[in-house]
Image (cartoon, rainbow, N blue to C red; front, side):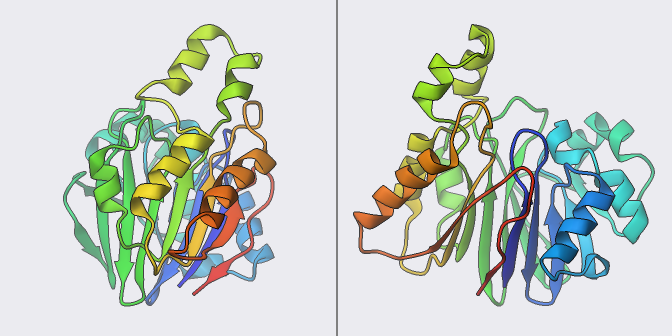
Length: 256
């Protein structure tokens, strides 16, 4: 199993997952050229990609998906409602639709797309399972619902949102209505809320943890890292490798 955050933040998001015999992306919010460049910088081969899975239609998750899918001749796997909302950005390419809440098979992977709360038309997180174990991807969460917590149980690797520091958000430059949107049920998880979610799903086999979708304005990587590191230091359940996503360069690659 391999996992790499190719891009993570408010300007573009993409996760590389290699599990079993299949390599995929979750989202492609950078240009196709940039995605390929970042893959190659980590020794990963774009031509091995089998598909791009889409969480929701916001531009920081889909801006490069159509061009990349056409370049590599791979399908875009997306819910029907999200495909309709993003049809202009995705353009003409091979589309495979799924129903949120209904698991399905893609090659040797079992894909479980679960509904999340965010201000998009049909947003989902993913649990991706192969013979090597489960990987969970959950960003752009307004709240960590019971369903989210249930779905993320037992993952060997996790990509979790840690979007903002609450004090930085409230004291920062954003207008009040945007601060309220970020803090709402349809916004983003704070560092503290990310830790709360992690507390509910922590288990002994968790080996890799990526903190994702950090705001450049309302968060600081050191604050996000400190919150999670402090929590992990206070428990003896597991000791996962810890990564913090970056907007401008890919993370190191987790290999399990």
